Amino acid sequence: MSRPAAFARLIHAGWVLVRADALIPREIDGRLPPSALFLARTLRLLAGPRARQGRPGERLARSLERLGPAAIKLGQVISTRADIFGRVFADDLGRLKDQLAPFPTEVARKVVAATLDVEVDSLFATFGEPIAAASLAQAHPASLIDGRRVAVKVLRPGIDRRVARDIETLTLAAAWVEAGVPLARRLEPKALVATVARSLQLELDLRMEAAGASELADIMAKDGYMRAPKVIWEGVGRRALTLDWADGMALSDPASLDQPGLDRPALATNLMRAFLSQAMDHGVFHADLHEGNLFVAAPAQVIAVDFGIVGRLDAVARRHLAEILWGFLQRDYHRVAKAHFDAGYVPAHHSIDAFAQALRAVGEPNVGRPAYEVSMGRLLGQLFEITSLFDMHLRPELVLLQKTMVTVEGVARRIDPKHDRWDAAEPIVRRWITRELSPAARVRELSGDAVRALKALARLADPPEPAASPKPRASWAWLWFALGAVTTAAGFGLYAYLR
Image (cartoon, rainbow, N blue to C red; front, side):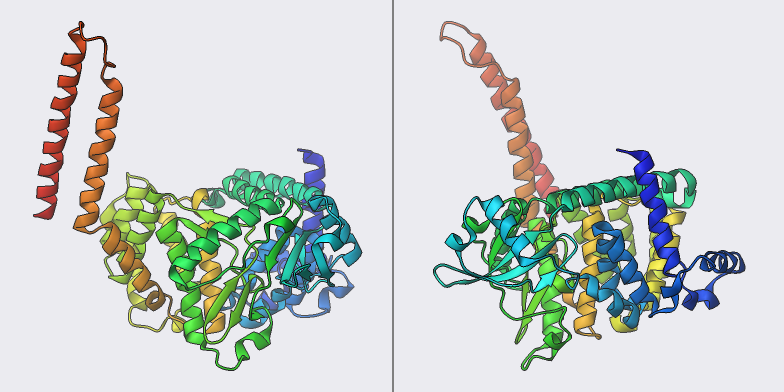
């Protein structure tokens, strides 16, 4: 990594934001403490002629677009949280989802021909002008030789180098923050950037996205809350991806929510349940569910596209997630606290009871209130203060989950301002708890433990030898004795559990 070049780009990013009055915009002067206000006004002396043009969100959107893919991704996440940043600000950032400047169609055709090693006209009967352009790629309407309507995603030329430069810059910025801002260290900025960098690198190989789309399409079909277009494998290469045409209207189009017969509450609920069922039941989830990647159709169909970022959770993480969500649903703060300690999210030297008390202080004021009346900005601020008291660090392996949860809730509230995330989540979490923590599930778990123990013992036992040797008889007798002991122990454990 070239540190001088990354340093120069970091300075450039700050300069772009300052020149646009997008770093500490003048509109928030009334809410700043004196020291921050002095800094803001000093920086504003460097603002350029366009700093007075447009609202804060518009100025920030222009700046992020100039700064490249990683900055645009950040803007996309912010744009989903109107409940935190305000509706107007979020709408102004909305153009970053799929309304960026496209590159020429002729260039896209050349990229497709090169990556698929075929003549474009031998695979596609038509290949139209781009209909959506995002930070890494753009989408073209097309039709196959057999007449099927499809969408072709094509990576931007030179995007690999641009992303590599962005990652260098973010890595340097994270190192500075971790070294110079003690308060930010528990957010693990370097680990966070490493996670973001890995997801961006995977997005640059559309064969990986095709595999993710295929896997998630199979998972979505099991619950029916969300659908995914079929992958056209002959149209898949490193820099191009072909999918069946998605039904409905893009959710980034304001008119999409005015379609006749659309059930907005059911649509928001389906979106939330689709994400939770993917994450909790299968451990695999679409991790980029902003409006630009979602299509909707009456009465409440949700169709997802753009599977460049796929999140994964192991069985342990899924169990902790379910325990935490179920505890909040049941107002069982001790259960929530214990799940945090069991997962290692809170250092063991703290008190579980004190942490449960702190969680109650945040949760109880919101009990019984409609979700749309709860200020997410204030709630997040309170949680941040509490986690600071208990030395909680950001978990890099959960970054995609947390980011997607924030995005999904923001989109759901945009669809239905009265959406209640807890009502939507309750059946999915209850189903998981019933299935995974029931007595029958405990029996399966104990049986699995017994089988694993026996396999370990079998590996320790001596292999059989010719009949003349007495050693096998003793070894296998010892193994059968161990089998009996393990089975007996499992039986007593099950008896104790069921009592």
